[in-house]
Length: 115
Image 1 (tube, one colour):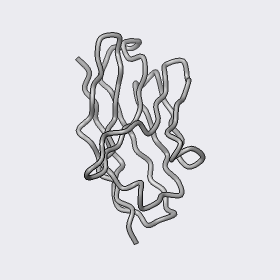
Image 2 (tube, helix red, strand yellow):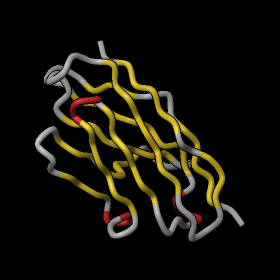
Image 3 (cartoon, rainbow, N blue to C red):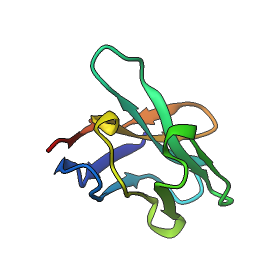
């Protein structure tokens, strides 16, 4: 069983920055990838970025050049640095962890971009 604890959401003005963190409680080596998804009202949940244990990263086209995902494998923690935030980045952001058998989800953290 893997539990995920997220932090770092909040309210920010357009052009601002936020950093999300997600810590996973799991035995070292169990998690193969960690990442972030988001869901805005009326939309489906979508991938924002993820990072494998080997360091390979994937980004949604909409966040490339603005968001950076990083991972501390020793601490089972993943970070999402979000810069140049836009109104359309407003959503609930969910941490995701993958093991060989299943996916696990955090409770979600709200990110609101508003002037």
